[in-house]
Image (cartoon, rainbow, N blue to C red; front, side, top):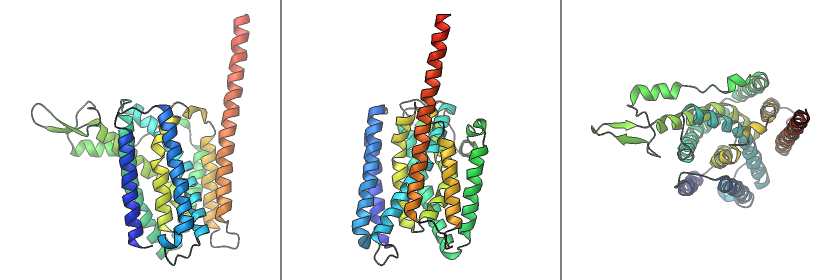
Length: 326
């Protein structure tokens, strides 16, 4: 992959991040705005997939991938990263609650946290690609890790989900003088005595980025099962993460209703782990089948969650009616 391709993609990413900063300049995002923004990011991902299909020979001259294979690999990787990243939304909600982040500060906190996560993920992707190129057996370690994670998701208790690592906070408070209060979107303030203090927003951003990287220990190996082309892995991660922030504000009040999200993610992790184990065998699973399985799993989880919520609501209504008659 030519360096100019990475350079141009980096510039495009900066432009998109700048647009996102401009959108949140007022500090509050309505559900309608967040929904439109989410659709905008999905539309951009579709446009980018189309550009890969039509201009792949320009993106990567002499690539072993055909334009069709590259476009399918990007789409599958994007959907995989998007579905796995949805679990991050629960963690974001926990972080905001734990650190009492004001509503007006949350959009900018998520933006900075996601940008930090993008940088850390890019480093992980480059390291992962190099490892897989030099040591193919690392792929099987990734596969084992994914399968173990999928089994763990089935077995985890709800109480365990609400634990947020304090390591970033401990490290920052050890090295940076901190203020006790938020000051809008400011990362630091100057006291009356002339002392510069970091605001709690710095801790929140660090924790968001740190937790995202922990989740990436699952998603990065998963997408390498779909494609080992670093540019496709990186671009899928970028588009999935850039749209994640808007999706959070859409689902902020609805997250508790998706009761089957966690089992769906566990199924996806197990499937991708098995796919990775079979990648060098005659039983290798083709990319388009991976795409179909991911879409079907997430669709079933959403529909089942909706039906369960309706059944619970009907049961509650019947209970209320019986109580009122008494």
